Image (tube, rainbow over all chains, first blue to last red; front, side):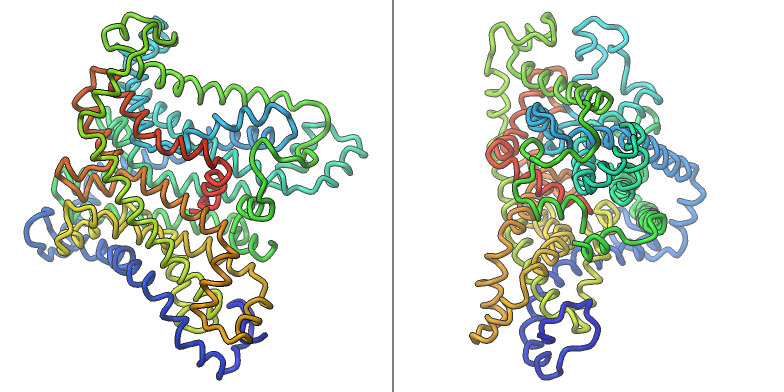
Length: 308
Length: 298
């Protein structure tokens, strides 16, 4: 049995068996390793290297020391992009989380009509961000869109033409796509709460609101952390949607870090500074992931495995 | 790995709508607030989808005059005809080639790696490989796109479907390995032991034991990756150039640039590109949803 010990189990397996299987097993991991190193690890190191070079995307790559970093760090565009990225993160979290918890709790219930709700509810998750952005661009068009057609002035504003409106529109469309997803996560979380906890609370005469705040919400702690981690780290990578919907505009009102990197690199042909932005993007992502993990006091992923 | 994933694994019938278990969220009285928010959001989700679908059947000439939420008086397929005639089948084929070409090898190599990590994970090499993949979960795709672009150019794969397939495989590997190894770990050790006593080697054990027993997980991972790659926009945007190498999301974007004033035609293209996934959703809703949540730790 020891020979089949899972990795977590203390104590090495007997040398003889390990050697015997040592032959085949590591080789099975090699194809995945090669592809991942080639198109994942090397690019990650490469982006750090490229941030110390000048390259226009076509010609020769020249080492240029800290030139790119100096340019990027001195550019007021960087703090702006960081700020917009932070705002998108905070606003999309603050809007999606309460809504997703409420919907998740509701979906976990026993209502009969829930099946109807479920079928259509998840469609946004399946669509590509490009398709969603294009559909919303048409829908929100001040002259030809839904609001104009219905002759409702409140709805026929220049949604993508004014900074605050464009920003809000981005948050709304992001939520439109992802609230169903996070509701699904919360639904799963709620279903794992033992029924007996609610029964005990009912005996003590707790009402619905009380039960929600004293049982449901605390029990969902790790679900909230998981869902928030996905929202926060995921918001760093909103590219497709913002690129198609606003292209960072109007002006640079919705120019998040990922978009800033793309524009510097592939539109202004400044791959060095763009790589520096990419390095910042990686660092911000790692810092946030670590922070949220510390906040949880444990690694939600690992512990769920052990508990399973 | 996660709450929801564990749920879907333990209860294969778990699906929103068919689950019969005592209500988790409180007493017998209806949950008014949750219900109100859910139905409101359902409307928010459905109205745009409804608008997209009905508008795509309207003629451009009648579109501006009609009530946007009224179904078309005389439904027309002209918009669809126009979209299909502008090389839509080619883009569809490109998307199909890239998706199948990336998903099949990605799941295959990820399964082998997951098997090796679970069965021989005590070894230093495989432990290192596992940590590397876990770290890979934290790499955002966008951040590595510039070196990927450089590598694809140097490999002379720029503007080719192969150039889209290789990075897509690499980006699919970490999560696939994580999900698959979680499931392979659940296979009872006694079964591995009896395979070994029967004299089966590791490759045979993988194929005859681990693979059949974890088939639902393989389906789930396949669906998740296929959806991600089918909908991918950034890689085709950066790694291709010629119109005949476009995949659907990119073609959609350029189509919108050309026909922006023809709203019904643009929306017909949106419907057409989403149709394959929607058909898949109707056929296998349960697998698709569990596929999505299995991937959620990304």
